[in-house]
Length: 332
Ligand SMILES: [Zn+2]
Image (tube, rainbow, N blue to C red; front, side):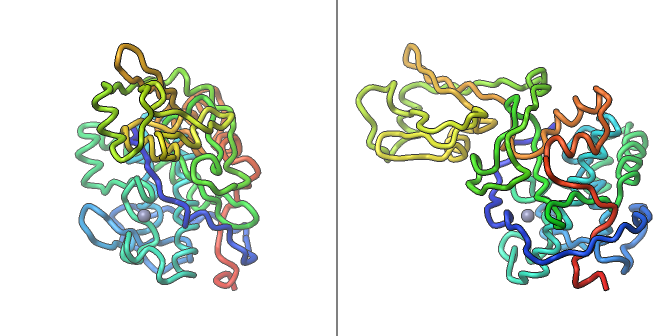
């Protein structure tokens, strides 16, 4: 399933101020992986930096979205869940493409100026056809058909907020509720608020623990002026209503929830710290940053009969799906 996503998105959380033109044209026709990208509509290609090969690829967006859905969620997911993840992946690419083109210096360091990269910790994970063959083995044909059918069904559809592509971040499992963006990355984004996702509580791997001895804890917190009582070495000082930790203190130092997560290799920012018999225990809920759509939740909703629109509107409240998107100045 998914990996931890330690995301540095502060720069990406930019609400565009340019007015956009949204036409309700037909969705672009899907292109097979074997076809070379051709010059078509603005939203049909994307430049992708492949961090595994260190190369920038010009991809047909269909191939990009298929590769993201394949890498990010199990191909055995319900079609409506696959579709929701496909729309989120495409929307993300459109947002990053528009931003990168408007800010040419952006993402030079991280991905050589490409619109998106294949690193899950930075953009979204992506697998090439070769990688998918290896991952799926004898199920390759079945899973390819499944994922491609879902992507084709919604291809070109984009999730908008204020007429601009939304920041469609997602992750594996929530803490039973999702995290508000401001509680994780500090920016308040209207459609990235805390919403119910109690389906996740039944997901395998929902609850995990990490334990450390006093000595190990002391080593991790080297450089902090720790109080004498080990029970007070690391204390949560600010917790959102959702349960996600905003900040914790270790003596004279303050950490964000994300910093604690990284330091101790926790699966999410939603954790409790306890200590008994000289052992610290982090009890962690969920997997991933918790902002936006829970992939486990998308599958659970699909199994309950919700369609991809219901899923997207649940996790990104206030957004609206458009059938097609082009920035205003390109849409003449
Ligand atoms: Zn990236």
